[in-house]
Image 1 (cartoon, rainbow, N blue to C red):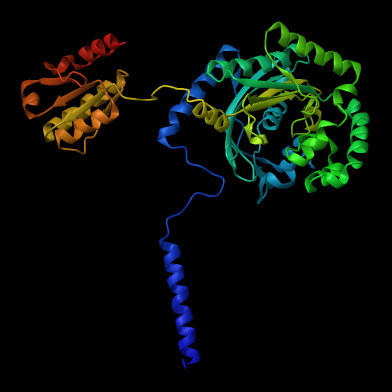
Image 2: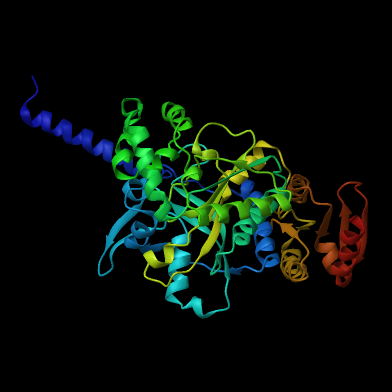
Length: 449
């Protein structure tokens, strides 16, 4: 039998082996996070350019709030009893700063910035636009990641129902513009905090009678945050929700009149919508109008929602500001890109080059480096691989990139002060004066279109 010392030595050797194996393992992505690879950048560029165009066209100014904020900002704005605050925020203690979080959404940050920087003194309404990553510690699945991206439009400082309609119209127009015209716009009014009190009592009475049939989360919501009962997507609770009291029957006349004005504007704009009496959104700061954008062929599950928003008039006071009405929308970029792919909508080739610059020999390399910079400054999209010496390998790469023209510069051309231009489709080559390269390329590229 092995001695105790031999057993211990063997155990230590195994531990060392495991440690060494772990240290040699390639680091992996964290669960719920994704790399945005070059192959997908054309979609991101397409969405970004369209969003920027809409922001400029509708008069929105760009704002970039920080990714890290005080935890209290979202606890006060989103609500203590919401799923986001209870279990989905990435929070940690920062020395001297208290508890801080990676922002789970951007509207609260925009409102904080509005208050902090005295934007109430600006001509109202203030129209702001943002773009960036958000973070939630939720179960990753298709269309839902722990780091995700949104852009949004916020109109702050006006309570006219036309603002609600305009936000919905902008969102609808965005999806029409990018080719996703098969969408479902669902709208509802959740009234104001005062008229919601009576409704919530009715809702609790109804759900208590069905308590045994509720999922575990909804049993907790029944006592903590009853309005969130209508936000549950589990099949068993969907059946109960269908028979629940409808909030539109309980809101006061002022809220009802506001909502009727919103839908009248949508009618006048010929925007199709569905009145969804159970739509409440998952954030406590909403009041009056709420809406969501779904694909028309949506699958079950909340991750299918492409965009959502509404009015949040009471949020400013909650965060210590003056009473200020506002409305906005957040648009999910990953989910929108998934739909573009699902519908096989072409978004262009991205930054595909028009020209490939090939070179042979040290002198040609130096001259090509200088020429490349000249072409780039003239905004001619040019590709190269200066590390390759083989002309064949370089032209094979040019073919893979799908360029129309290849520039070929060898030792002979350097000596003669010329350069070869090859049409990659026809194979026809011509020799031109090196100093006229930019001029000739501009002519050829413009003629191609």
